[in-house]
Image 1 (tube, rainbow, N blue to C red):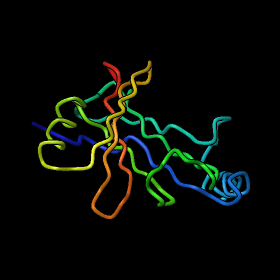
Image 2 (image 1 turned 135 degrees about the horizontal axis):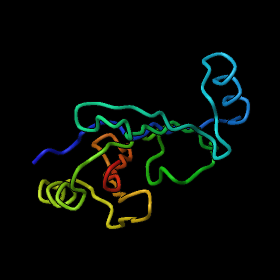
Image 3 (image 1 turned 90 degrees about the vertical axis):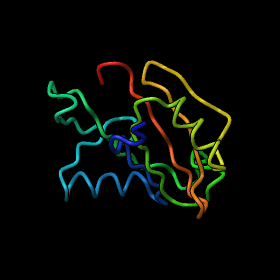
Length: 128
């Protein structure tokens, strides 16, 4: 079973997210959307139509979205079959969150790595 097929997103916290977003816009040319980040579009052999995305977003340093991790970042990895990956991780003794979110954006699950970093796993909706 193939597990990770790419990076779906990079999220990090900032003390002054508005200032930091402006720095990235002004100096690196990253267009920041109203929701606080951007979605980079890309194509590749697995999606030649170019509908793949990698999200980049800055969170408030008080955000609890990464909890129980205390790290200031979280990486989201794309997977093809979230249910199967989460089951395999549980069988291997990994600390897998029981919660799974499903929405129009896909399916999301979480696991903690051995250093206490929360890792988000994302199964995109069909065609994405």
